[in-house]
Length: 59
Image 1 (cartoon, one colour):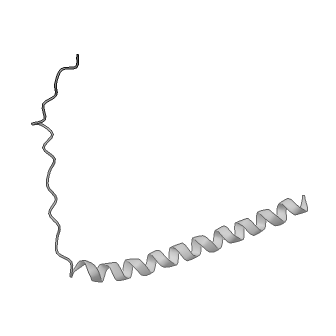
Image 2: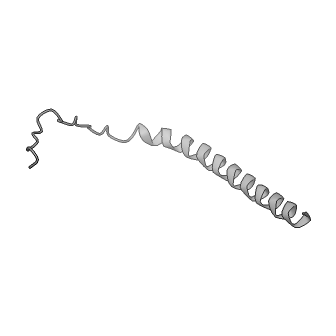
Image 3: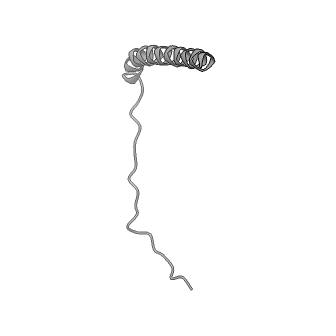
């Protein structure tokens, strides 16, 4: 039982450390991405033309 609890606590600690590192990196990326958005050109998104497609009858 002691071995299980030791391994369990170690895994929880590793998981907690990974969550903290992930949250810190996301907050740093959000600060830098807002500066880059103003310099980049706006991309054009073309709509899909799904109504003009014709299907052949299956044999």
